[in-house]
Length: 142
Image (cartoon, rainbow, N blue to C red; front, side):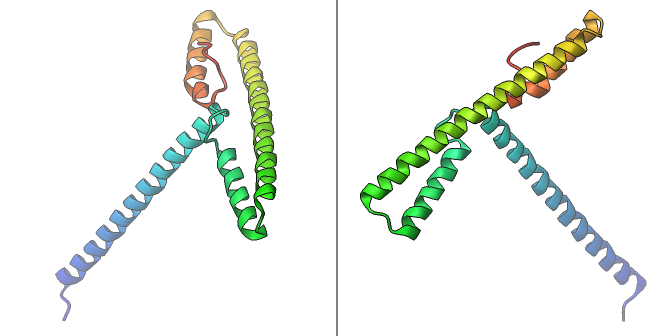
């Protein structure tokens, strides 16, 4: 027969297991999101790297096309060249958009700073640089 102390011990054990599970899930999800954020920041801030996400996508598309369409060597090289051209155009477009976004952020920061005294401008610029430089939006304008 269950005594009150046995029942209490079981509930404590179950609650402890639930707590450990919740903490593990929270750490796993939180850590995964931090890693994902860093990967996205790096990909955005460095669009011209040779292993950018667009290069991986293009490689996957090419391998799927080759496998599913049974392409000849000449067809495969033509598809490869076209996909490389598309990747290059996409990188250029992304670079252009990100440069415009950086200019917009910089202009907004300049306009906001005009309304603040010099001490607060310096603090705002420092904080903005800390938060926006990892994303490639401010280019060393503390």
